[in-house]
Amino acid sequence: MNLAQTKALLSQFHIQPTRSLGQNFLVDERVVSRIGDLSELSPEDLVIEIGPGLGHLTIELARRAGQVVAIEIDRHVLPALAHNLASFDTVTLVHGDALAQNLKLLCKDWDGPVKVVANLPYYVTTDLMLKIMTELPFCQSLTLMMQKEAAERIMAPVGSKGYSPVGIIAACIGTLRRVLSVGRGSYFPQPHVDSVVLQLEPHHEQLIAAQDLSGFGTFLQACFHQRRKTLYNNLNGFTMTGNRKINPETWLNLIENLPSDRNARAESLTPAQFSKLYYSIIEFSKPI
Image (cartoon, rainbow, N blue to C red; front, side, top):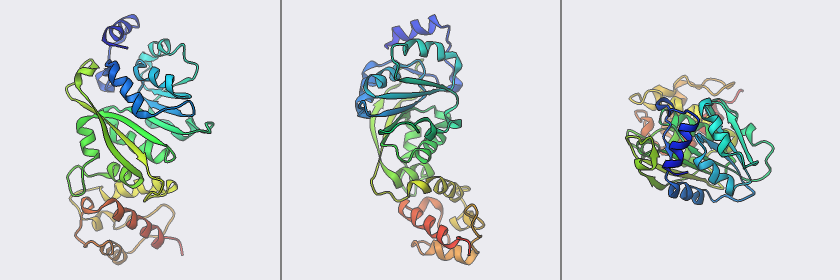
């Protein structure tokens, strides 16, 4: 759908875009087609789309994939979305907050590949990306559109202020690439910032096993709980659920064995070092 068609649909269904939900509808048909190309979909694929809005991208995904599950939080756009998708019997609409959904459950009956395509709202970009990666570790690819500033933080290098758990998890499970720039003029209403599309392609051999991703995420949150504190001070007292507590001297030995030093902060560790430390913690904290 182009700009004129979008305005007509908004008028027909009496919809006012909601700024708090980050509702800036993608009206550049070239960008929509390009995202479809980048997703590399086939009839064997199930696509989970987060934030379909009026269905601009959903229609493109439905033309290419075998099944699409689209999660939309705003009930006001559902009639227009259903109207646009009426001719596609392979699309399932889910009304609700994606953060509250069991993403794994949404694709439990699908035997083929699963891929995620999402236009992530700025205010929950990090939370949603973490949820997707930890709940759907078997995903073949993630194609995620977000504001440029959010993407820069997620891809921030080791030692920088933006370096964070979401970028570390991405690096531990695959290769994260910036594949497309999307100018603010491609949206209606036009936002104040540009966007980019990031794509994550998981590796066959990952630094963190799929079944450990959820616990690893909790561990990283503890490491970065207070960024100005040393890693030791953030982790001293941290325990894996159900396991025994590690004494302070052992914490220091684990950190210094990375190699690192007792004054190191979380932002100085590489993804591989975090992986090594995490599995060391699991080993040392096992019940006797």
